[in-house]
Amino acid sequence: MIKVVNFHGMSKDDIKSNMRKDKDPRIYERWVCINCSIEGKTVPEIALILYREEKTIREWIGAFNREGPVGIRSESPTEKKKDK
Image: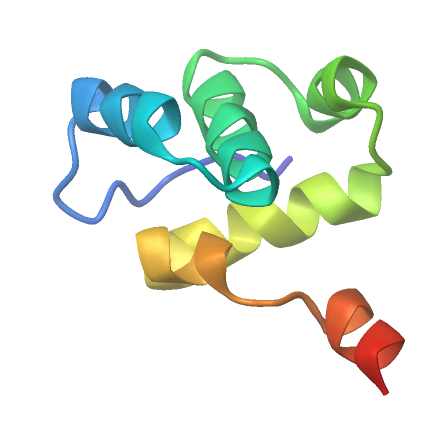
């Protein structure tokens, strides 16, 4: 089971604050994903909430675990392929 395990020095309140402040809807959605994971929701539950594939949710959480906020701002491999 994948979940947020590395907060990168951020508190839960910091994560919620970033989620509320972000103006980019794409990034806001990723913050919601991270927040849901922190609140104990599973990947399938988050996927249903956000109308996304479970694979996408895993990618977002994995990126956050590896890189923190920078990771959720990066383009996913799927997005990079669409641009080409």
